[in-house]
Image 1 (tube, rainbow, N blue to C red):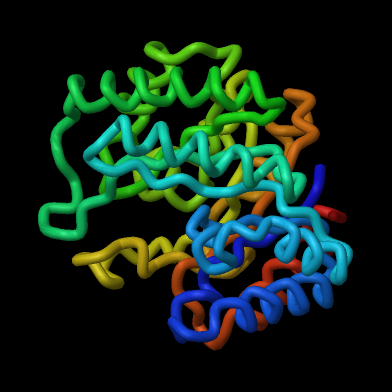
Image 2 (image 1 turned 135 degrees about the horizontal axis):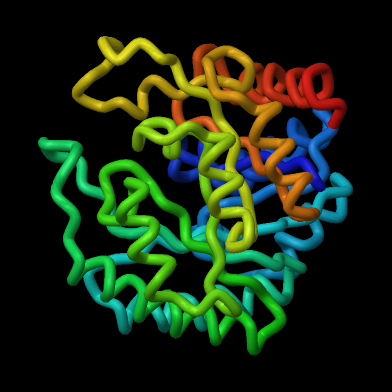
Length: 272
């Protein structure tokens, strides 16, 4: 398995300084011993579709871009055309995976009833993008996420039943799985045959922390209660050899410190 880190949190502070911040992310990830990185697909705009410039920076720091992350909108045709554009960029920079995520809401309530029609629509779009990715030598992975239509175990099960297991894979996230009420290690064992990519982050178990936005409870690895040893065991038992990508939405101190804590945990607790 390769250990990766997500870079978008470096790129949200200064709208006129994206290239510098992206290179700083690569520099820090390499310094901490991460092998691969990922970023939201909006990186294509920051570099005006110059894949060569991005690949040059990756090579400079000895890193591989594993994944670009596609956020769905309310326009499935536009989403598909974005995937067409991004897969070309992915091939030029050596990325293999594309994470797909349903539209996220920010208004209350956070938890909403299952919407079978919306899940079906996402499945149709994901199947289409999955075929596109497969035909271009890449892999499409859907990412269940809080405050979206595909989040709970029931919703994930519905989505998987409606998607082609040969072309649409799953990117479970230990923290979102936990927020959804599942035990992470058991969920990873259950979905092992469909897992194509993995996100790791920890969770504060105190539900009184930020009840209006539970994602504020996310923590660096080892600082919450997620059973990462169990998750790792489930993946190993299933023969998973892909990427374990660490991500953290909110930093207790700074991006570098969060990435450092998580990298040390993976080494000390899991021997990675």
